[in-house]
Image (cartoon, rainbow, N blue to C red; front, side, top):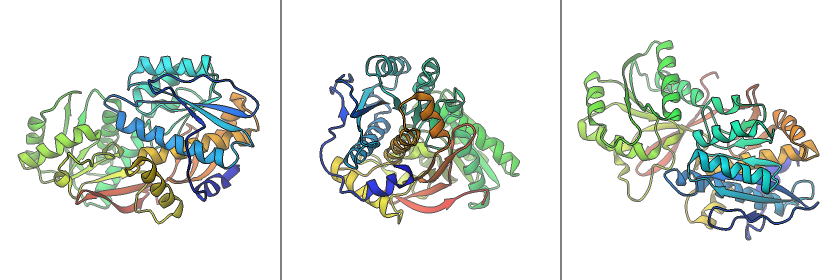
Length: 388
């Protein structure tokens, strides 16, 4: 399969049912027998609950990759059997689902989880099994530090915070910045801490570092304090649900700062949200729908045909993550866990989200995409690498 896998797969007309995917529809997996013609790969995602928008997109991306790989002959002639569970965004559900995949379904590798807390729980549990795991989207730095079997296809939280601080200074000319983050959320607080540290290192003044509690819906007090400091940039490292409320209230209280964020902003544009409050806002992402890469455009058109919606960043990362695991299994020439882990660590991969290798902590090395929200659409701004 090697590095040719993505080019070969994306050249296919991605049609047909997901015959290689197995789920009963109620969160349970169909067990089925394993044989010499199949390789079992597991999946974990929040398909219901508050993070379902992310989880469904990830699962869609995985299923598209499985279909394409199987249509292209599978992994060295063996078809992938993809078995997945809805963990509902809950750490206990995620751990129980992981145990089912490993103990009952006998998967050789796992794509997941999606958000940080369930991923950390699964990563910690997996240390007793040494099963290879790649998360497409969990960004907390601690995830891959849990053990040498854990990889990721996405950026880390510190990377995003530092990158957006550099962008605010270098590209937006900011000298005064403010931050509003969820103090109870590892994703939000981790990115905020990295942003603040980097902003100070770059000589910017952090005029406000405001916090809120998970579940809060009124942010006017913090935003009024921020307005009084008159920052050039307001950095919001939050998920899209909170972003909708915060951006609307920021406009209401009269905040005029440039709004900036991280990849949690992806999926904020929906039919029931007035995105005019975010016009001009920028965030870092890992791909753009305006990419000129033919493979990306083929993926987008096929995804839209299948699911009647545009793919978000999470779907694209999941497609890459699945192909990376498939390539590692092929490179290993075996379904032995350690052989797959060793092959993954040495992987070099050209995907939809860029050219990737892994660093010593099994995080991908690649540049970021800066995206702007304009007139209810995501607009590509530039590929940005602060070290370039």
